[in-house]
Image (cartoon, rainbow, N blue to C red):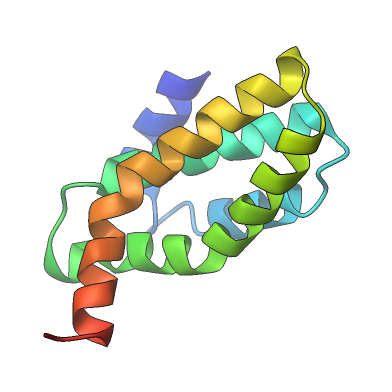
Length: 116
């Protein structure tokens, strides 16, 4: 599933598949539905990964994704840490991969916000 989403996102997002990110945000807002939450996280990870090494204006969608989702993801991490089971461990793993993949975007944002 992840490879399929990544391929479609790579070829269709953001030009043709414009509604994928709003759909992901909607699914992330319901942490009680594991299947939809996991699918949304996999979709977000695929989108982030596709934009990971892009530069300039091609990277703008990733900066918006980071800005729009990281506070939601932080809240999910807090929730996941309070309930430990196999499902929550899988969620945490995907969330941490999203953070890891996006870390250089945060460096770029912080360097623009807080120049030396």
